[in-house]
Image (cartoon, helix red, strand yellow):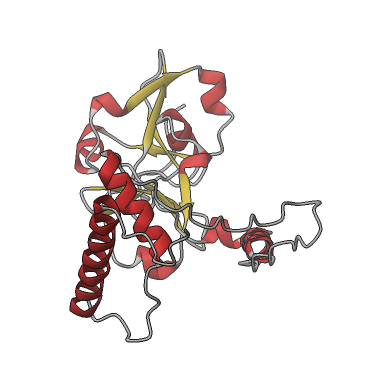
Length: 254
């Protein structure tokens, strides 16, 4: 005889059902506390059952695998797009402009601007000339060359004096008259020449030799014996004679 009644559930099935109901209710309470939307999808009984079964076995349920983000296409693969070019900052054009400016300045400072072919770079005092110091050699528009001593300009009266004092033309700074006008004029720089065996002493001035009449005149002109240079007599005779010192002293002795 067959019975139509369904078999009653076992005690383990009833415990699992109660556990599932408790889990669903707890998840619903957590969702409401977190402010989840009302239409959020409820967990499936299957996932709850899996969690309950894992809990009954004492194991940790395996988390669901997250969906992998599709990899971006690499160069050479279909769909790859080259990156946009970086805008240029114009370094090449700036470098060319700086080079052209430097060439123009060099040409400007080296073009002759006077009738004697002197360039602007030679007329303007350089950085060293702007440092006011003793021993500075200066030349204005005229032929005179000066040496600066104690803030005074001293005229170097001859090429003989210029060379015997060890000066060189590379150290002469060409300036304008206004630059020279800011200094007072001091005593000229002379060289005194004398040949051995003869008494006359000459002062070389404007490329001429000027006889100094006597010792009193020698000292009155501010000369000292340390200024006298001994030279060959033939060399001294070849220098043209100028007016004596003083000019009314007459002809020098033979």
